[in-house]
Length: 374
Image (cartoon, rainbow, N blue to C red; front, top):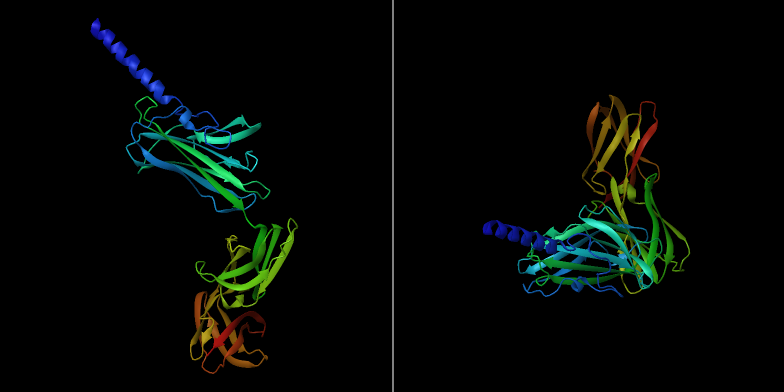
């Protein structure tokens, strides 16, 4: 009988400890991030008798926020010393008046949204629905946060709690962090690049500009290494919609061109737009000029034309200078499929030339610019 009672006591004790451990292991009370007017998780969890060390970090948010833009945010509770068992978190985004801003989406099943009225305003929070175990010293949660439609500074607050799993709060360790992200000096609402003939047209639009000095148009042929090809002065006229455009007339030298916009502020800070890609592919009646290389080309080098055709064709390739004079001509029998045609550049002097593909009826149906250097 005594053994049975002992087993009952032990079972009851385990259930009691489990209940203590599960206290706030899911969906903790809102208002515990340490933001203005709030307390922290240390209200219920304190002591750190295990001497844990660590921090909570927020990543995925740029220093400059764009309006109405979705960012993937990652909150990590990091245990740098000690052997914490699990962790929980809470996160909120506030404007300068302490009101919640932005919207949350695509959060994990381990996270949940909640609200609480503080300082007269309803604040929205995202926190753990289930505590997570540490993996390589960190417990992380990810979610999407979309910035507000108006330009403003946003303060992000996060709190994390490390627990030992022994069913009491005396060993818990609470960490908090704050991160302030300011709006872009310019609110870019549109940036596009598109092919027009043998050039690229770039167009962009801003909804507001404050202390913005200029825009730099950057170009790349590999998508990795960019160079500035033009600087355009910003209008810097506040909350007025501004439209800009630029023509890259040397884009014909490349098959694939990448563009991005660098927006520069008075203090030297800057931000980049998304990257736009323009493909130059010339096609006529089933014949495609895939590539012309090298371009630019040096004198005494061989110019290569990569062509694809769906049928056998006979074409004439002509090279014309800027005055319209025919400098070179060569007949070519095109087979169905991929073709490579080599053209010698021995007799061409430095300058800009046009490659023409002419059919049997002397119709000029494909043309491409080539620059010959020394």
